[in-house]
Length: 542
Ligand SMILES: CCCCCCCCCCCCC/C=C/[C@@H](O)[C@H](COP(=O)(O)O)NC(=O)CCCCCCCCCCCCCCC
Ligand SMILES: Nc1ncnc2c1ncn2[C@@H]1O[C@H](COP(=O)(O)OP(=O)(O)O)[C@@H](O)[C@H]1O
Ligand SMILES: [Ca+2]
Image (cartoon, rainbow, N blue to C red):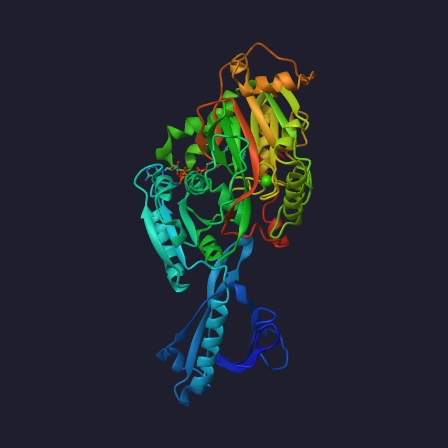
């Protein structure tokens, strides 16, 4: 076939049947779209449709069934030839569905030409995965992981000619351990079916494997980690599904399967946690001490309740109203362009993430990684109801805007939210603002900082000489004088790290810019959806 400069072909334009009518169908490689237009003079109800070629899922030759043959004017014609194009249809609230359209014509050669052209176009989409490794946690969320995968996801993968090796996990850490053994180069990506905990397992397997293969010691908090280029896809089947919701805009298995099929790629910041120069864990969504740590600890005993356990434990923890004393020292993320109080959110193709990544790379080139230690540390001592460090907005169905609505997925920074001791009523007002449009940082007892690293020690462990903040204390003697130490401490809380508890309370955290990649594209801009959740009735009551 004739080619345009750059190897592109001229548009393929034909008059094809769609339903009972003839349509002008165009496959335009240069504009990257398949369009079909009713050629009759425009009138009410006549449609023009198009699909970006990057969102075509599959093309198949179709047998016309009897029903179709018995309708329409072409009833008396020779047997028509037909093909079906499966494509992504975008519905409300970031939901994607697989839709299809069947075109027909009498000319067999023309039909084959279309099928061939569409297949070649699909072949050219190099970012699409062909072979995937799938881990299913059958016990996550409402224990529907296996059913969700088999009924909603596997048929789409097979339609898109994606082959899979499926592992149904038999115990915790099964997926993680398995990732250290498999021939990972065989796969174009790894899919986890489950919640944030299951994602965390797969991520630890992949990042750990990557560092091991490259001879990097994860116990060294300053080690420059090797980026993980194998993408992870998340099929949400857990209790919170915050990582999926915050990177796709909805926790919906079909939507996520389609993002995997079209080969989307979203880089993601990952933070590492160390205790006394020993690696503890990585996290990508929430690292929370106090409120969210206590909820998690209590909820683990109530797993049988399913996702409801978090509401039950949330209510209990809210009533207990515990606060914790400790010291936080952090390094502000000076390279990051945004701030946590920005009105603009991280959206598909976010320029703040791109620019911040470049700034950070520039800094590392000119000053090296060790120079970071000499940069300014801010130290804050106080009594806190919650300390939340979030790498992303942490939007989820319970809170569609999340814990930090303006946090970025891939800017090399985390938002550190400090909620100081306040009344139960004030804390409730703060919580409720996670569910409506009001600013949850606009309280005197809430502070938020964009950071690239931080350390924490609880008051209980502060006297321990080996604690990480003692080192911080010696070096940065400045403490916040507005919030003096109080002696009425209760006990330590627990850290909630992407939904898993940590054993140590004294920790050292560092954000690694874009350490890994997801099959996602961030949240797409869509004004219709922003208005989808309005002021909650609870807030109106307060
Ligand atoms: C009064 C309503 C207040 C609603 C406040 C909602 C804030 C929700 C923010 C949720 C941030 C979630 C961050 C993500 C954490 C996940 O990584 C992690 C693991 O997920 P996985 O189980 O899928 O593996 N999930 C969690 O740690 C669970 C967090 C649970 C948050 C539930 C909060 C409910 C709070 C209810 C307070 C009730 C007060 C009522 C007073 C009358
Ligand atoms: N087969 C299994 N049996 C028990 N636990 C498992 C299994 N597979 C994975 N897990 C663990 O279950 C935990 C929670 O999984 P997750 O999918 O996040 O569900 P949820 O969102 O309900 O917490 C994770 O820590 C994971 O390591
Ligand atoms: Ca970030």
